[in-house]
Image 1 (spheres, rainbow, N blue to C red):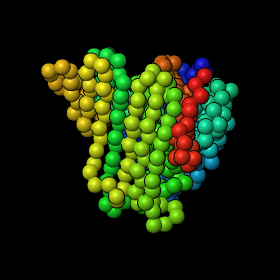
Image 2 (image 1 turned 90 degrees about the vertical axis):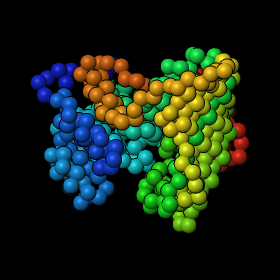
Image 3 (image 1 turned 45 degrees about the vertical axis):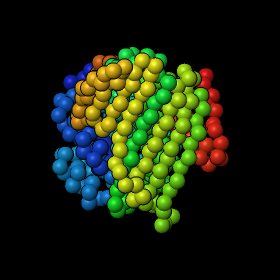
Length: 334
């Protein structure tokens, strides 16, 4: 449990933001709307874009994240930029005594992620790995209705995003985005949050690329065996070789099934189909931000721990090794 006494003073928590993309904008707006926080500094990769962002949100423009994490007037560092650098920024922010919020993944490397969690405890600082999919309507609806279908034995989660042409940006860059199921860690985390520990994973991945750093498409498919006996299947694909957008989540149990297509859900049981009300996906960054501030000021528990995200990272890393070695990877659960 970290100390939050600094926020008992008559001033808001001072926020430094790393990143200027869509997620950073939503974070900035959330902090501006909450009187308990004040966005004081922002840094990004492009000076012109960073300057415009800082001006729009009335914050100081900082020339690098290395300088931002050292600023004495920053209490909380929020990291919303390329996956590759998450671990490095988290480490330096914690070493400089800052509380930290970071988008998943915490790191590409499992050992480094473990070290960062240990460092947050040594420094007595909050480390929150954002997983807003857990706050979304589909995930909450699955949790609510899961008991109705009895013992679950199969889950399928497909997210396919055709893009013609594929954008030449960091999410299509091997080094910056990382292995698909690590960069898109939520595809596995949603299942693990619902169904618990994984026994083994078998994964296949393919890229289509015409240059070394950037690819035009990827297709990643993983089969997971859970210790409960449940079997899981995950597909993550994006880019120019895909032709039909898809966002499907299905859970099959001994007494029924839960079927979600985009934001429409149905409970299927013998002889009947009942529609499931699904909440909106809008406002999740604001909700996460409010929960972080509640944690800092009141000690209110967050919706997940860094250790839970770390466990999913271990499974995703096993999927990466499965792809590289052509083998089924056994997960060591302690």
